[in-house]
Amino acid sequence: MAKRVLLIEDEPNIIEAISFILSRDGWTVHTHEDGTSAMDKVLALPPDLIILDVMLPGRSGFDILRDLRENAVTADTPVMMLTARGQARDRELADRLGANHFMTKPFSNADVRDHVWNLMGEA
Amino acid sequence: MAVDEITGTRIRDRRVDRGIKQADLAARVGISPPYLNLIEHNKRRIAGKLLTDIAAALDVPTEQLSQGVNASVLDKLHAAAASFSANVELARAEDMTIRFPGWSALIVKQAKQVSDLQDHVRVLTDRMTYDPELAGSLHQVITAVTSVRSAASILVGSEEIDADWQARFHRNIYDDSVRLAASSEALIRYLDTPDTIGAAQTAPVDDMETALAAVDYHIAALEWTGRADLAQIAKELLPKTGVAHDLMLRFLTTYQADAALMPLDAFGPVAKELNYDPLALSARFGVPVDAVLRRLSGLPKADGHPSMGLAVADASGAMLFRKLVGGFALPRAGAGCPLWPLFTAFGRPDQPIRADVALPDAGEQRFLCYAVAKPVGAAGFDAPPVLHATMLIIPDLPEGVNTPIPAGVSCRICPRQSCAARREPSAMR
Image (cartoon, rainbow over all chains, first blue to last red; front, side, top):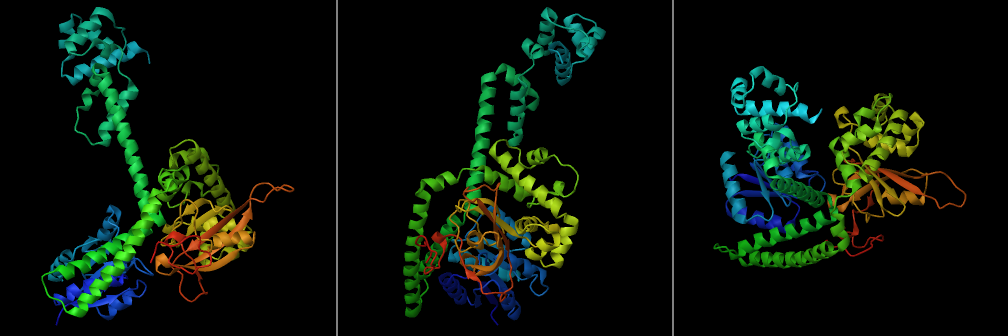
């Protein structure tokens, strides 16, 4: 069975593009656009890897990441953060909260694919 | 200490630096070791030929022993070396200030310029982080660029994609390019406005807020009933003089008064017990509601209290004080949303307002806001009323409490196109 990627992102066109390239690579891609109910979605799946945007409706990606790491089910799930803010403090916060990778927009499709492959290898 | 007294110490320091024994130096200049010992301990005055001989024996200029150096320049050189973590000959700094006063002054001046530029960069970085208009516009641009790049990359890739997907990505690129153009134009207009360039300079109120944010707006030194040296506390929090210091003093004075009326030991537990209800707390402690709002915003998170924001404005809309809280951006220079209870409170002076506010750029995140407008200053017949409104902002409001007010942060970045309070077109899609 193909491994599952959950993309939590609220920008429809970015969702469509990432879903397309990852599906083409053979991953099963699930998407979710809302921060408030993101944890429910994660726990219902649960995915093998999470791509998590920082700025989401309802809750920030950092808050969700904190919850992910505190939950026994998702504590070890690889998380790749996406953000338009590449400031050092955001990277530090992502590191501190346990993100496996931090990717700054605008990223390339190749980078996304490579890091998904790498993180899936660790999963 | 007299110059001669210091001269002996300098001789001793140089001799020890160079690893010369006291007896050897004494022999070189033709005096007894005990006499040199007295000189080095500043118990004998020294000048003239003997001083010149000792300087020659130590290979230092005579004036370095007799006059010392400009302590201020020396301190600044040490500070410059420390700030750059430079691996320099610190022990020779004094020599340098005497031998090369011009170069020393240049280093000090350059270090000052670097420090000033670093401060400027910090202010600009801070602006990038906290200016909601700029951050919102940039986020829109970067998001659109990301989307265009990703879709275009798929279309030009070597792998074939079917016609339906091609059409979808073409449409996405077109939509994003339109959005990108609008966002870019809005951003350029914003950055070209002279006022916004000026706003990038650090203002005294910014200095005060930065200093208070460092202690999470909680002043532990004022949480007791004894006397406190407000000027000293202000200086420790914000080592600046002038307006910034005066603003800090004003804040501390109010904080101290609020703390006296609502001592932390009593107020904290009761606030929790009453679910941070300002009116109930006002009644319990017999204090004005605006004081309760200020006090709630300063409750320490370490005691398990939620983080709460605070905004104080005057009737012109100018923001007098801000304590930021996650998701609720408060513009530095006015131009906030007129639908905020902070501003509607001016229409009902002295009457507290409670409202749930939903912000679009926080993903319709809801905030519980309490606000009240109060007159300030002494009353006077026929004097124009001067009102300050205070608003407490509590994030993470559970849904379904009340119908929220669909507000925004600033018209420029608010997507509520049909809002009756709109002042100018939005740069958002």
